[in-house]
Image (cartoon, rainbow, N blue to C red; front, side):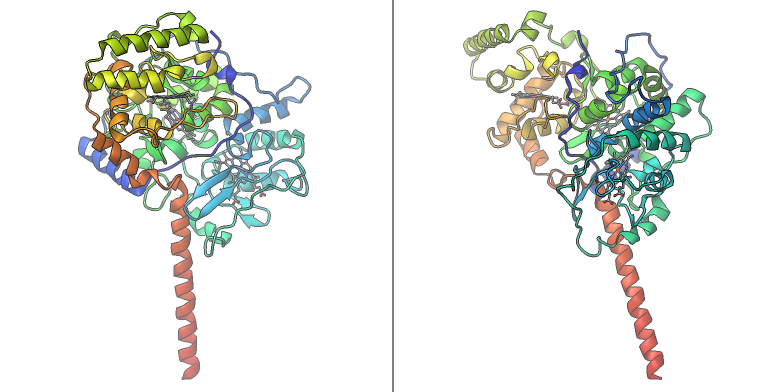
Length: 509
Ligand code: HEC
Ligand code: HEC
Ligand code: HEC
């Protein structure tokens, strides 16, 4: 079978998600304090196949080694997630004060960074300083601040070879006063840059993994909540964070709530293909990270990431998972049905008939009928989907096995925008189905495909999840630094006012 990722387009059409409302962060913090952080010994890597790295389109024998290395760094640092595959920019990163748009970083002199020297690029990446203005941290320079000079040198060489796009970006970042005073970011940078310091107790592979995770891939932007200074909450490093309607799960080695049960090969395979058979699926923002970045990494680098993730502190969060119970999972009807659409249609019709005759009007039967009517055309009667077309296989996936049904309810309610503009989208059902029906569906998929033993999601819970304030303001991630900007601006203005008053008083004397 081909890797599902092979079907992903190279042209992104995405919005970057991220971070956590303070409420959630506090909640997680409190529960972590109550439960205590469990420490779990690292699992040994089990030998298995990680599929081959996706070839990077820009890498070619016609280029110098330096340029090819730069193309790899650009993938590993996921520049395209925001600057798009052609580097012309345009992706808007939402903040409560307005969108911050990624700019054109092609060599266009007029619209891009054609006039940049290597030192200019270094300043932008490491300090958030463009030649004539301060950048907002929607550009992840707090993470990139740890990049090596060698990697920036290669990246600079590569960016020179990218075709110039001589077009003004259709969008301009225009935040209201006082957030438009970019210089204020310097104050924020003093507390929050660099985001990470390298640990001194790691072996060479783990160090490489640490560099990839913290500095290039900036995994923490999604997986770590923020603290009150709106830098990262380091005690909840990788313990999971809310991203609008998505939740980036706990990826610490905790057995109950994190990925402690995953082998290093499991982690590497997931990052390579976006899927771990009968275990986990990379949807939404994680699908994007895989599509633009991790599927291109060398197996060595993926293994380095995995070995590092095994030695980060385990944090127990409330978002615990039911261990996988393979015996309870449905069997694949057969591959024909998974891959042949006509056979699949027939299979659904038969299942509908069967469900209809078996239905005694119970909630479970109604939910099965609803699943067959609303979901089976994409995910299949047996939940194995159509992986070749990237219709998600949902059997056994972690989203269905969480004690808290938020993730699955949000997916059913809001749907999923495809990771790239050619990957399929999942419609949201919040306008079409009642809270009760969504609860029934959530229970049906959790039990039938997740192997959960009970049906515990209630309509009331669904209502709460769907109306929770966390779901409304998408991408709160940047609220933090914006709030800090506001506070700093007010302090400066107050200072100025007092200074003026004092001067007047002394003049009057
Ligand atoms: C999470 C989104 C994101 C990622 C990933 C990202 N950028 Fe940015 N970048 C932005 C945003 C947003 C801006 C504009 C910030 C502003 O207006 O203050 C920006 C601005 C820049 C600038 C300043 C351009 C100018 O206007 O002079 C450069 C250079 C840059 N990015 C390079 C990169 C490179 C190289 C990478 C990969 C190593 C990268 N960026 C990854 C979001 C991102
Ligand atoms: C039009 C096709 C389509 C329909 C109909 C559909 N889905 Fe999906 N679903 C998808 C696709 C495509 C994905 C994967 C998206 C991605 O790659 O990010 C997905 C992903 C999922 C996931 C995995 C989310 C995760 O954690 O990554 C779940 C669970 C799910 N769907 C449940 C359902 C349920 C329940 C229904 C019926 C109410 C349904 N889907 C209807 C296409 C569909
Ligand atoms: C843009 C946000 C984002 C970035 C960047 C990101 N992730 Fe994720 N990650 C998510 C989301 C959201 C999910 C849940 C996906 C789902 O359920 O379909 C996830 C899921 C995962 C999972 C599966 C966990 C489980 O229990 O199923 C792993 C492992 C993971 N991410 C590792 C990483 C690593 C390693 C990086 C850096 C290389 C990374 N992620 C970068 C958002 C992100």
